[in-house]
Amino acid sequence: MVVGDLAIEADVVVLGAGPGGYVAALRAAQLGRQVVLVDPNPPGGTCLREGCIPSKALLTAVSHAHNIPNLAEMGIYVGEATVDWPRMQRWKEGVVGGLSKGVAQLLKGNGVEVVAGNGRFLQPDQLWVESEYATHRFAFEQAIIATGSEAAAWPGLPFDGKRVLTPIQALQLETLPETLTVIGSDYIAAEIATIFAKLGVAVTLWGDGLLPEFDPMAGRLVGAQLRKLGVKLPKGTAEPPAEGLVVVSNGIVPRTAGLDLPLAGVETDGAGFVRGNGQMQTSNPDI
Image 1: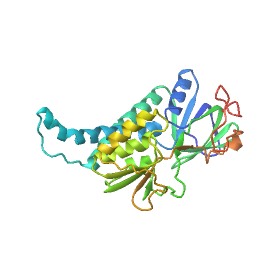
Image 2 (image 1 turned 90 degrees about the horizontal axis):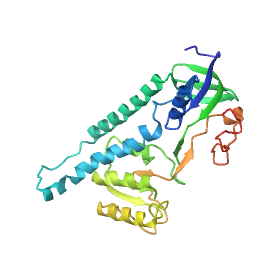
Image 3 (image 1 turned 180 degrees about the vertical axis):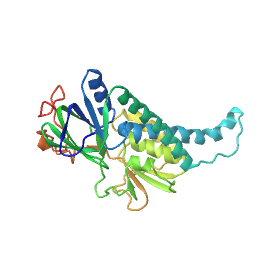
């Protein structure tokens, strides 16, 4: 590929290789468009590579280990189970890697050019991409923004990757903590609490109600199951803990910072979300 200031022409440039971006890239390529897909990470996005799939893989594994003592009721006797957390993590990464490679093969098979790097707009029809070893300038007819979202911090508890973690970082821990506080009341918080409680970690789930986005009965049922696992769900706690390892699941914010959207004529709202019409066009109709 030619690199540098010379613009490389493309019909469609897609920013973000998650389930929104890579599917859009595939469909555009199937319709005969020359497509470039830009993302600093391998295809798959947060759900496949860091969130949904890794969490379900770990939840499956820890549930097997947690259920072993119950097998005796069925007349099945096995020795005491031990968990090799690093080995479990490697297995999880194998699951994720296989799925990501499958997406990469789909893209390759449909003629989508995948560029590993971070993209930002230079003007309404040009994108600058910085990769580890080179830079690229793309001139496009249309662009698709599918950069997704990232974890929102809790007030007064900025993420530091050491004591205060995102759910993604929690799923990537190299060693198991003795105690863990999960701040949040959504399904991700409940899932993180479940995984680590089944691993024998002393978990406290701190939040205002559980699963408020679902039927109240769902929150009560999940809360009861968490308590059976030994998870503490304190009531009336005004402030989150100031010590110990903390995982914050406090919703999401759009991942649009750094895209230089104003240079492309793309408007956002006060929270950083891209404004769009009924056909998903931005204030720049070609994006």
